[in-house]
Image 1 (spheres, rainbow, N blue to C red):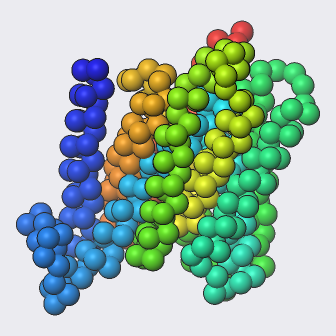
Image 2: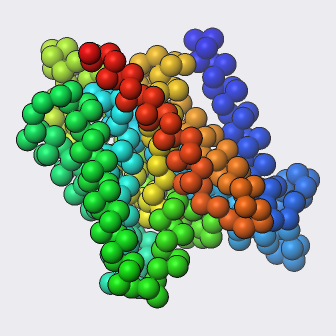
Amino acid sequence: MNRTLTAALVGIIGLIVLFLGSLMIGTSWIPLSTVLDYMFDYSPTVKEHVILHVLRMPRALAVLCIGANLSIAGCIMQVLTRNPLASPSIFGINAGASFMIVLFTIVFPTVSGLALAGAGFAGGLLTVSIVLLMSFAMRGGQAEVRMALIGVVVQALLSSFTQGLLIFNEESAGKIIFWLAGSAAGVKWEEINLLLIFSLTGLFMALLISKSLSLLNLGEDIARGLGQNIWTIRIVGSVIVIILAGISVSVVGPIGFVGLIVPHITRYLLGTDYRLLIPFSALFGAILLTVADIASRFVHFPSETPVGIITALIGAPYFVYLARRQSRSAS
């Protein structure tokens, strides 16, 4: 309990500090006093308040929500598939959602909001179905590594299709390519409203099944013996993953590896009780992506660098490490 309270206290304080830092740091420095003044007494006649309201606050909120979403999604995927390498990006959900969103954006240029979220949901559902069906149809090797490899192949294939769409639609390519790298710059308040609705819904559903996920983590036979409906857990869990990953991709594009890294860190600190893993993964995911977003502003200052590039630099070596560890433990 002491470890849990310490982790909660340190995490919440750290997130508050990082959130305020995200509002202060940019092409122009805004003092903390001005940020606090904006938060408690917003004035549209103050230039710094307008910058915070139009640009920085929506971006900071989006990063916070999406870091939490992707971490929860990865946490659930790892227990549903019993695969420590599982995450929305590794299993191709991000790529599938991105492909469908880009397709909708090109075919219907004025589409936005709920329609894009629905497109992302459909793309994620299609992709995860393909990965699971192919992994069940194939034999040989460890199932965990096999599913991860199939996910990487499907992700690469869908990414190629997405690039092909852009080649034949050059007028849309510039904006979409920046979005495909995973960028939170330019997020608007209407997108934040939609993001919050889906994020809170996904978090609430995840907390509802957290006890069942803990039992499933002990093994299907044990969970079934304790009265759990395995297929119901898998279906509900998959829907949560696709909701959280789909809405995140529709707002800022595909951001990889957050859903892979954070659940492992949380599990190492707090154990395997998903009643703790779900909320703490959300907290630590928000922290990780906020750190990455702040770091992305210094890579090519004052120009913007997509935050997805920073998470890839962090996550790719970690994925290799996990894959090697799985291979050694299986041999």
